[in-house]
Length: 184
Image 1 (tube, rainbow, N blue to C red):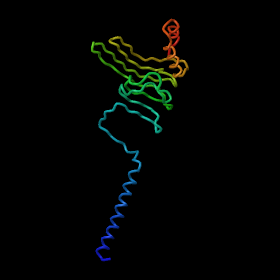
Image 2: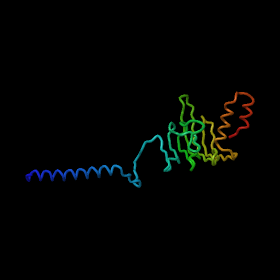
Image 3: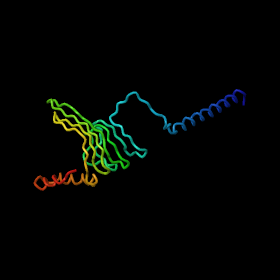
Image 4: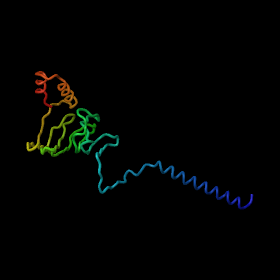
């Protein structure tokens, strides 16, 4: 082979080796885990919902607007009424059950009537709220204060099941008596 051809083949080999090495570095770096300790800083963000979760995905805190708010959750599963009614923060225990929160709303209707509520509550384990700090105003009819409740030792899911069965009863004295006995 002549000298020019040998030189061209050598440069082609070097180019192929460098290109292959560069491609390998690029391909391997694409599969690297990002640096978890690096924090992202924002001056301001707009969000509809923030879920604070454990490594296993279990909810610890939800901050949300009205539409994206969760309904009640026990052991990681929704129960009772649907979400979308209580903007604010909802706290969850280690088992994925709701155990308190801070909710709020307020607005004036086109007819001039208004309502405003701020509600902070703490739930008893496996039950409903037992400590409530609340302000509520329905067009001038106000309730405000600290409420401490002593609840029977009955799991919240059993209370909801009983409440649902009473609601399904036909209207009449039997349902009225059941409603009087039932005090969640």
